[in-house]
Length: 310
Image (cartoon, rainbow, N blue to C red; front, side, top):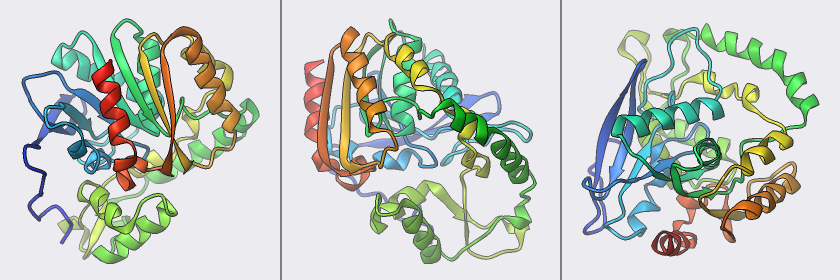
């Protein structure tokens, strides 16, 4: 069993459809919730997660809410980048969002994102300030911010690690029994995601071992090159400059205890900067970093109210 074979049970009136969006290196997979005849909110998951991160929240929103939850490249059911390429995570995400907007020929968009996805929403709104109506950022204010000395020191290590991952052939990919894999995922999230919700994420995050690998069990579908994220950081000065460009309505939901931020003052500086140029609703709720997956009832009403008002 891998969790994808059981029929999905949804509340009455709630619908979801798997879709595929073509991109030059393959496809981007997604889950389109709600009506297909209205423009959806684009939902973007966190680093090394997938579109399943919204499976518990979206059914709690009004059934006529249209949401397109995507798997970022290298995540979930989306194609990995070709061999020899690397992920710049934050920057790649802006390009991908632009591809999707152009693919559907949308003139203005609304975005909701958790963690990395919230950072991408922030970046896209800053890059295209006249083409975004609203963004909802969950437990993040901007892309990961690091002091310059930290970024410089990490560069060499990151590149070496990336080249090591490139050599990871199919026969070397570790495979595990289902429950053993869930154990690994639970441990990796360090309490942020319950065991049951780890199974929700793994519906798109794992697959049976490839037949030519001559192994039993399951393997993680995400591209191991995604683990090298140190090349995508930015300084607080750069993040504040992006914040100054945003003009759309902003809902920022911070979970408590949520993420253990190294510099919480960076988070608050971004929120304060946003308030200088646009309308910002900042809310603190009880929950882990994955509050939208682990305790969606803590934020669903806040999001519904924001969507209705704006």
